[in-house]
Amino acid sequence: MMAKSKLNKLLDKHESLTHSEMLSVTSHVQRQDGDWILNTIMVDGHSVPFKFRRKKAYKNLKGARVNLTYYPITEEIAGVEFEVMKVVRIKVA
Image 1: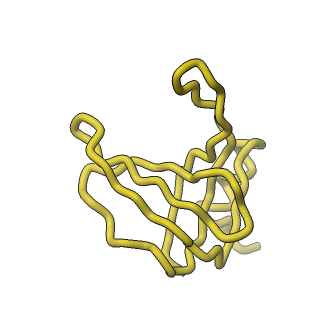
Image 2: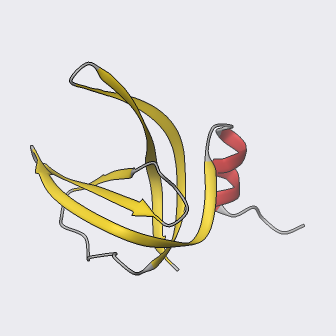
Image 3: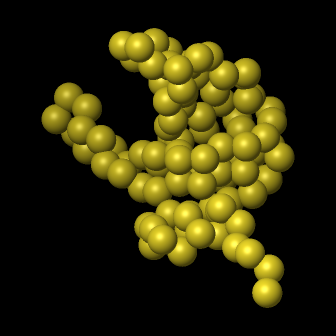
């Protein structure tokens, strides 16, 4: 029997995780957030932003195809709640 990949183990362990492949990035913004760089991407076919943090700036992903592992969260901004996808794994396809 073949060993499960790290991705499959992660998806099995956390029910709320979703994995999507070959998503087309339409917008990518990076901004400083304390010691971290907050990355926000918009993906073709989705109206919700995908966010992730890194210690260093990431290459510009606009126009790239990516594989994402993420889960939905709710952020409150100025008293209004917004749905956001929290990215736990991103890889250029």
